[in-house]
Length: 312
Image (tube, rainbow, N blue to C red):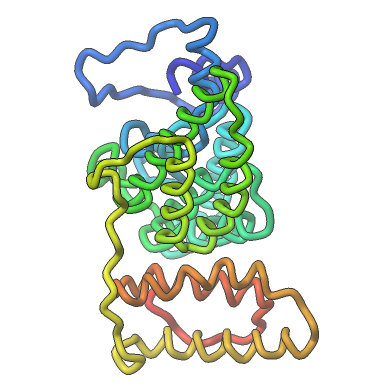
């Protein structure tokens, strides 16, 4: 971020115009050096959301209440979009006045809208999307959280399972670039990885990892056992163990999905969101699961209230 994004003239102008900016270095001795040539071009290719455990931008009110978070590295044009979104949250909070509940609800609604935007169309890469989905879900659960309560840079980073897979993908990209510099044919790998984004967006991490491992094999690269992505917990809860609000919303989503099928509508965008539900339920992460259900119901055009939920 310091080498590329924070040296972009548009980013500098936007930050200086609308924010009081500060930088806290959590790694003693770190310095932002000026880059040129091949190294600069390499840094520019880092995907949005990468290194979410190393750097994070916290957007907050003057009183230190979180409005938005942008973990990891972001390309200038996409970082500017997150700046604009943070400002839109700030405006919504200001319009809510001094009522604490109204201010929190303003944050929740803006981040729900942000989640819906990610579902409708996102062009900032699969990793950036995963990072922002994680942030939006956290902000819905903890609106206007105090900056002083943030537990370090890694607080809003992706979970270890996703982060490990992302690290492998980045390593694969480097290996592909090296083969290209050597004049070798990487088309078989490119063809293999065409379905990777769909697997990642569908939450099918094991299948996505298998695709990456196969690509490494085609390149002749060896992976150690430590490079494996750990499998998520498989303990399944019975439906009776789930909160009533979740059971109610699952039933409503099922009814709407069946109606969509009868009407011949495309359920692909809804399925991409709802595929995230089962792993969360298996892990007992009910608030996150309910946030997914709310997104699915929104995409399905739910006009009925499924009753109070865990987030209300």
